[in-house]
Length: 251
Image (cartoon, rainbow, N blue to C red; front, side, top):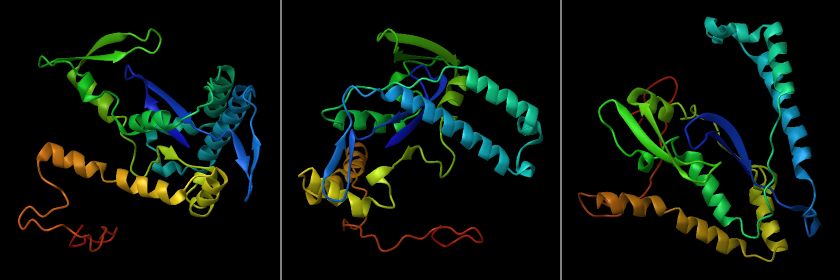
């Protein structure tokens, strides 16, 4: 599982990827291979991430339709400019940090997932507003101490909203036995190999799925799944989407 974050704690644009991977692999019946705890993963990931990144960037250049690119940005697709970008990317250091093996990944998964959807600056970090400037605080990674910063209101808002991904852009990606295409078939086998109960795990996930309901009820004092007029539980009958050609009645 990999999650892309586009910003650091001080709101600067610092795109990076958090990746969680298994320390081994399996076939249909057994856990076949565990990666040694001292295996040097960083050089491997650094090389392959760089290769894949550059190859996909070249592919994006080849496949891009210039008539859909604003005239002010078309210079980015000139070959001499592309070669300049490639040389620059090859000259800088690519950082890959391999963390310690996790005995329990639950905390890390929650941490990464929580930051995948939050804005660059949390509401709790904003500590005031005088009509012009917005001060906020954050924990500096380098010092692990609380730091303070102040921005003009327009810049503050801009830093919050520009991190919102485009429609259909996937921040979270799954691969291996978590891939959408195969997880229905492979996950039960993995649970069996690890001597864990798949059905219990699914039941727990379904229970956690009602978290949003309890939160809305807590803050609004209204249950979103109970009709406020007749107090009868709501039942999902169908889902109707808006088409590209016309406006649906329920769209």
